[in-house]
Length: 377
Image 1 (cartoon, rainbow, N blue to C red):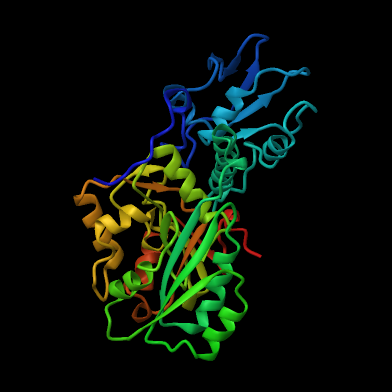
Image 2 (cartoon, one colour; image 1 turned 45 degrees about the vertical axis):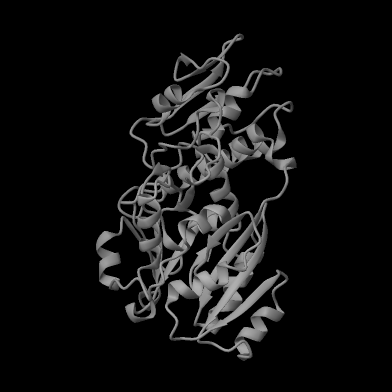
């Protein structure tokens, strides 16, 4: 039986689960009556629960009307933890400065002309992600907690991509990382490999694996050297935000899931120099599928599941299918901090044509246009 974390207690049951990407109702107010907080005209009690947050999900957001003197802010923290978009152009001096800055960073009245290229909903969701990080860490007391250690497992046969991949792992915040790198048919003495390792400040364990070994077996060979509490799969050709791993661990903490990952939403189509977003895979939901390059789970659970299937392709799907059949609970969080690179299909184990991604795109932009959550330099 896979070991699971305990979800948040009932008092903290309002989580990002069920967040709606698009609002169907206008923004409302969050105001203090002198005795309690009202959201859209209805009281929230001492701290919002899941039922109250569900009522607020269709709103574009809540504009906070602060009183001049200090009042209890547990409701604000609870709404932030649940990812409810909040705004206040200015906050009184008694409000925690970090929260005050977040509330001023976005306004629900922002419009960008609408139409298929609209990013208004994306800006709203980015605000939600920043708020949930702030709120969840405040409720968990995570800022002073022990930093978790994550063993990042990566197999690569493309040495020219290793420098970028290792740089992105090294910039991960709020976690301790080690890298288990399987060089799949590539010698450790390759100049690009040596340069990437020389420029990386992280501990990297390099394992040379023969090119004839199946991809899944190469990953398992690397994973067998893991010493972290968690194992995370990483793809060498994709882009990850600096809080990618921290967001996955947050999702694990508020759901108690065995396996967490993100939705595969943003794709950079390299031959076309275009970025697309697909929204048919909902985030913040229980599922049997997550983006393969974002799988994270406890090391004990990974061992119990027997690792990745020893296949040349379809490794991620095979692993998730086996995990689901074994009773593992799989949760898919937001996909704003992850961008998949697509070049010609022959260069990927997941072989779909560029035309397929254009067909399923909700948004399409010229050039590399990730979410702001990716924090692209």
